[in-house]
Image (cartoon, rainbow, N blue to C red):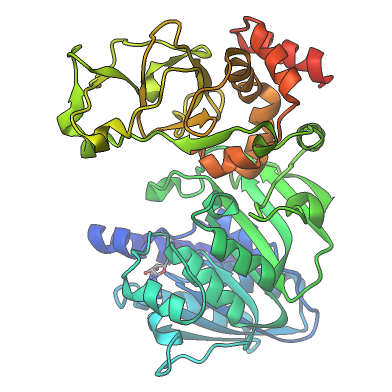
Length: 493
Ligand SMILES: C[S@@+](CC[C@H](N)C(=O)[O-])C[C@H]1O[C@@H](n2cnc3c(N)ncnc32)[C@H](O)[C@@H]1O
């Protein structure tokens, strides 16, 4: 059999396996199988030795597509190399398809490929004192498309991971941590995962653990919300990355394509441009073109952190479903404005406006009153921008001139304040101008692949001096062109 046929056969098994899935199991076990073209891209990432035996682990192997793509590449490129594969899959319904794909891999390898399928839970069976799988430091390469799904704090999987020394808030993080442990020093991991662990506090402990264990070699990002898994209904920003266990950080190859069928543009950047050495949060930043680098340099050259200008940022205090008793759709005695993301418009706040939300907050207890902020100017930023919004960060200034008195901000907003009180008008407006600039939008996209804007993300940004911010704020700019030309004029962007 030609090695090229191998992918065709694996694709038939993939489609058959997908067809046999139970909808609930599919979602619980994160069963989204990689299409052949994407699998080829993933399998192209590791560097292959030319001789000897490559020991490969494929955890959460599904129908075996990744193994098939890797075997195809080895057979096509390295005639002297043998491969031994261990493919682990938990779902017995998928196992016959995995076994069929592995049998084809062995057949295509004509003695150079040995592949074993193991029905097991990769997390529970490889951790703990009674672990039936001993995988540690055994493999030259782990190739994986791990399952995605939040792990509840008390879940068996999360508990097992904590006992193994890693806090993994999602199944894919647990898989990655165990994969790295399964590598011998110098071994490589190649994975396709959501981009969400690259920034933000939620994955902070896991990200640190991963970056302590491997040096990134290559990161590929899909530019559009991914069509990679179009036939399985998954829509999210995915990355493919490879890293080497215990390697010294050197350079990283960054590449980008619209989807797995598109042309790839790539560049090599120093490791320190991807993970800044002085960044306590260790965000993984992707400046995929020269303009990204220019913008990153410009933002990082700004003199201030938020703390330097004496400003804090917190999420809005009102969680509406917990405060139903205090919410009202009409004005009531003692009620104050309750501001939602839907009230933000063109750098200002329109309140009330026709959105389907109760826009008054009537405190009836001390606990309710603690939700209010005193009269003042505040900069507010949406925590979740809509997908169709042009910018990821959408900022506005709340003006006490339009609505004097106390105000309440709903939890889907980030609020800039000074010790729980307002800012001066120019500063509040100026921060909104800076955050709404295209420079900040481009910079933000280098480290965040999702539409969520965490307070932590905002705290890590750099800001011009207070004088420059106030200068921004004194100008009545609304359109993107006006915002950008003002920023350009004042900081020589
Ligand atoms: C996203 S799919 C990817 C499958 C395959 N690697 C591919 O790329 O097509 C994840 C696979 O992991 C399996 N899985 C989920 N939880 C598992 C666990 N705890 N242990 C082993 N396999 C698991 C699922 O059944 C599913 O087949």
